[in-house]
Length: 313
Image (cartoon, helix red, strand yellow):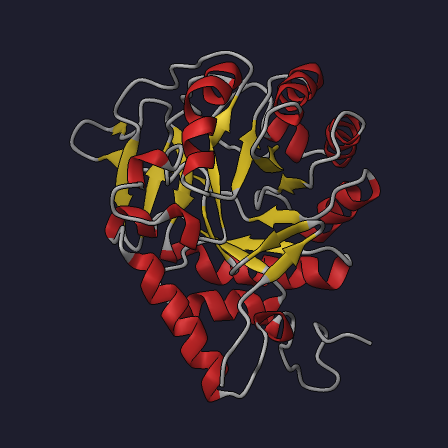
């Protein structure tokens, strides 16, 4: 049987649910010689502030068991250079482009989105209110229900593009933050961003990262991320973009069964840049074996025992 991998995130139509995660795929062009960008569901490009940003000094990446710590500090070229230099080349390669937007204030988020709203080729905005690696902005908004509502509402007023706040896992009840984003006008939510973590060099007794703490990603966080996607799926009637340690098609399927409409793949790109065909092939094989005609038919189909406290009803 033939299967349909297409999914919808608000008004954003994707040919398949596989998205390259922000921060792990550069601006997309870095991978363009080995990955046909047009075959991906979308690319979430590296986070953009209004101006260029150097990020943190090295060391800023540390390998951990089943994962990776990073404290890049959202190094980037700024939104204007992206629109002038990168966006036209991505459009030529027929990529679906989701832009990850950062800010140190509500006004900065709004101004960055204004610029992108006028740019040809931007398909959606991923609002980064959850980066654990910077002191200003980021989690200052994402760790507050009111802050989440305020920044999403302010950006919503200046764009018609699909708006996808990226939620932090560094909170007790992620579902309540999804609700705050929904009430403020979000079209979807993406989760999870990295977990705040650290590593110490026992010989020097100093932190291994120059920023002391960084964000933990990779397979180590996947079970927690799946749980949070499930909680958000129960909390809001919004499409969810799930992420956190996806390395195989089985991992992708787990997120979708938990409630994710689409997924982002991040750290795996550093391990296997040719992962995309394997993920798509695995999805097709699973859907065919289970006689499921559409990928969307799989979303949120987790079966829970009657009386289970996590079951609906």
